[in-house]
Image (cartoon, rainbow, N blue to C red; front, side, top):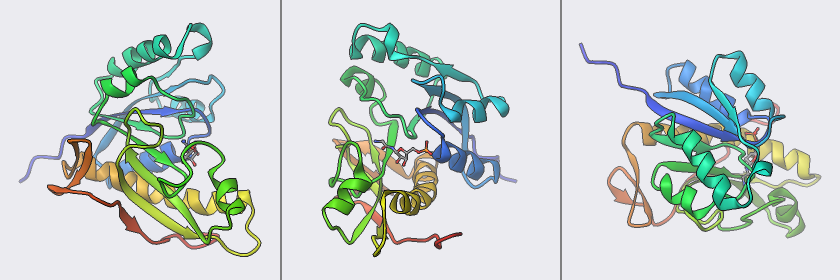
Length: 224
Ligand code: GAR
């Protein structure tokens, strides 16, 4: 008999509805992802993700930046909340606030983000609008380690989707989001299995330095 794999302690940071949080939790509940969500932390009291987490008995915290003089002070308080749950991995899942360098360095090598573009294209906001405006023929999502450069840390895994005639921001965002729900749990699973690490400023998978991200094609079906 082999001992059961210990579950990786994860804290998830959210600002909104939390569909990525739910996708990760669903994989964990199905026994396909060896993580335990220790807490969900938000900068916004009205984030739908909080209600969802509370209904499942997952501890939640809200820390509004309004009560702090600057990004650094907010980052220290946020970091203390996150650290109090002793996470082995911090997962940014639609956390829409720029983090202080100090916060990022505190969780260096154990913090992932998902971003709705094929980084390094379209760091920042309005990625779908920008991809459409540029006339791109493909778009996608990236999972990356978080470093002080906004959306600039080493990318581990990307999903590409086509941009098709008649697409608007909403249709493209929905197509990308379906892929996010596939690649984020997958990447977190690699980290939980000890296959993925951050070293010397780079991502390493199975002991090899990733000089380019792993790319997967569009796996979900429209309307599925
Ligand atoms: C996702 O599309 C995620 O990639 C994006 O916010 C959305 C959150 O959705 N994140 C960013 O833009 C970060 N720069 P969700 O709350 O349903 O997971």
